[in-house]
Image (tube, rainbow, N blue to C red):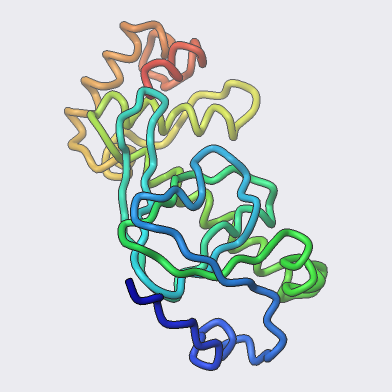
Length: 214
């Protein structure tokens, strides 16, 4: 079997965009089906995909797949490393892939000082991207599960146990459901003990809400 052609650094989009010739990445290859970055684990390196395709797949605790996307060359993955955050999805090779790897120490040196405006903007962008992944995942599945995920995220963000006061018609639109579907989902969560009785949307049991969100 013929060896795959070498990667040509002079055609690398990352090098061309960054304007540097001193690239700290090292090249690597994996066969199709290989897991490059596991979900729920802080990545050990940043990966820049050069050839082939990968799948970004998010799994719920129950084992059900809640989102799936395909990415090709010129995709940068594993930047969660910079935030010391776990991967919100698993990255695995859909085809044989060639990619370049940047280890943590080299990543810190290559990306430079975070206290600059560019560095601060990078961190804010990564944090916002992480929030959007969670929001997209919350919109998957049956209405009750979607609502439970969303309210669980809100309860973890907002302290004090205050009721969620967004109008029902707006909340239904946010979650991609009709107002009457939202009303049924709220009734189900109250009957299950996750929400307090009454018209106000107030979490009664975060543990029960988490169970229903899976």
